[in-house]
Image 1: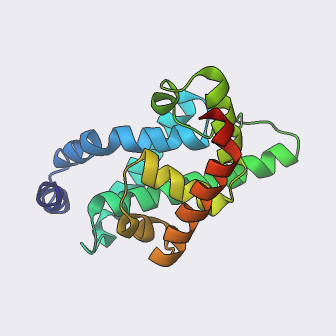
Image 2: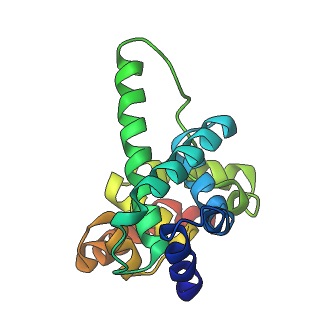
Length: 179
């Protein structure tokens, strides 16, 4: 996939904007899914994804080819999501409710769990530190490696491992009665 991404990027930079459609098609699911984690309404996640791909197109000339393109795109998307979240949080504090607070777990994974267990897991993940929540999301639900998470989050790999260890330990302690 990395070679396919590089080929598409080279074509886009050479003026073939249609090649960008292949990139969008390849990554739209992951970007939309990230949007759902930050914004609870699908139409907001769709707007978010469109904004991410527009910004990525505009910034594509700045992609240096170091690391995976998917990691670069996900980092860009994460930054857009965090910025929107902050703006919306500020509006919420000023009395303008813009978005509902999203669930902490993605829908596909929660289908496996019963309603009671799912709610317990969601409550406990919501109690993790923001860093632990981010790392859990990227590693367990998005499938990113430690190196990719480091690239996306700008956290050292040791910190990522620590977040996963501490988060797992807390979840295990808090959810052991559900086993």
